Structure formats: C-alpha cells, structure tokens
Length: 125
Image 1: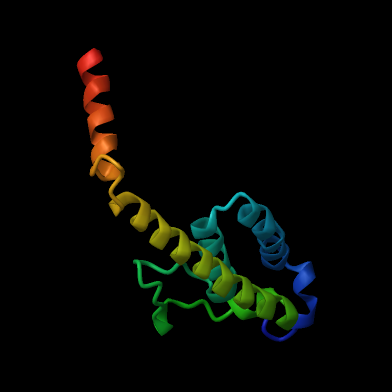
Image 2: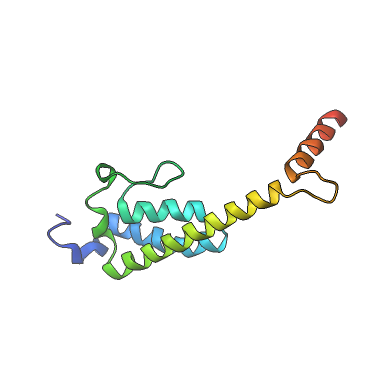
C-alpha cells in the first residue's frame, strides 16, 4: 500500500516513527553520541543496522520500504549527516588512540596509568 502512494507517508505510522527518529538525530549529535546517531541513520536510510567496524551493508539486508519513509530532501540530509557523523567518530577514535599510546613525562602510557590506579583501588579494598 505504501509503495503505491509514497506521498502519504505522513499518514502511516512507520513514516511518523521515521520522522520522530529523524528529529532525534540532532539531539543525539549534540550529546556527541555519534555511534548511536550512525545506527539511527542506517535504520532510517537502509532499514537495517550495519554490523562490524567496516560499516558495510549487504544488499540482502536492506529493507525495500526504507527509502519511502523519508522525503528525498530528508534522505539527502540524512546521508550528509551520516558522512559527518562517521567522520566525527573516526576522528575521535584516532585522537583517543593517540592519547592512549602517547607517553607521559614519566615515560608511562595513559593505559598503564589507568591499570596502576585500578590496582591501587583494589588493594585498598
């Protein structure tokens, strides 16, 4: 039924739910929860969640009705947001890896300092 009249998407509960999720994306991004935003955008655009670190989607995993839930303009904006959020997430991961592996003034990495603090906490208990 939806395929024959995609212009009436706002009358279908799936379309209403899709726009509710779309309206939540900016809130999620402001809280810097980029992985959650990426998953929500994948659901909106493709009808599924990408599995794994490479974020690859198989053609069999996609829902054929997903493109009908948002207007073309909203789908285009969602694709832009998806690229931006993936860029933010990748930059955050790279900077986190640099911070964790960078030696401090004492020559220790941050991860080894965390391990030492955890051991001290356990010893005090």
